[in-house]
Amino acid sequence: MNGTSIALNDQELNFSRPARGRVGMFVLIVAEAAIFTIFVVAYLFYVGKSLTGPVPKDVLSAPIFYTICLLSSSLTIHLAAKAVRRGSVRSFGILWFATIALGAAFLYGTAKEWHRLIYRDGLTISTNLFGTTYYSLVGLHGFHVVVGLVSLSIVMALTVLGNVGSEHAERVDVLSLYWHFVDVVWIIVFTVVYVIGR
Image (cartoon, rainbow, N blue to C red; front, side):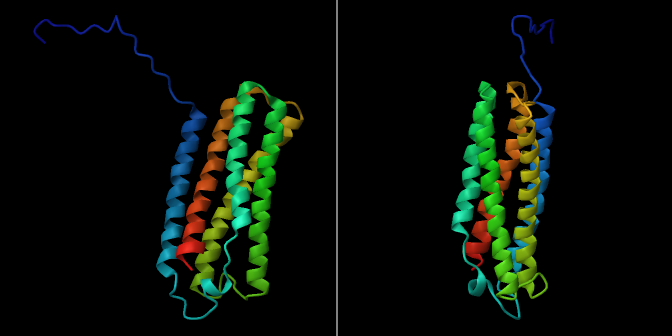
């Protein structure tokens, strides 16, 4: 470069690698988002193409209350993560338990809806295209809620045993990312199944 040299002595480049757990969770979320995209597209493609009933408008009613429960759990888990970062383990435990309770209420609502659809309305996964795509999409989301609740419950048990403190804030944040993902996916599923699909 014609004798010109570039010196970085006066400037220090501060670069810190993101936590491995956070990177791993983002990779998982991207992969899971791709899977959900396939299921959503399939649902939209096949909606209205069933040759036999029942059809969505005949049997589906929007689970507003249980949706509010699930979306509220995003707020409680966010506040819980902030509490553990501050070192307030008691507040963390209360908010974490509230998150579990709200998620469990949502899961109960899904089970209740499925019971009605199967035993009263006669809609099973093999009834028609609507049944197949509905149970596949909503079931996939329900499975992710179950995985989240199991993970949250393990953390809750560790909290009760006194094994969670501010030093675990990063891990709590990483797990909360997964739960936020589950909530965001439900907004999409709710819109597709109970708004567009009806």
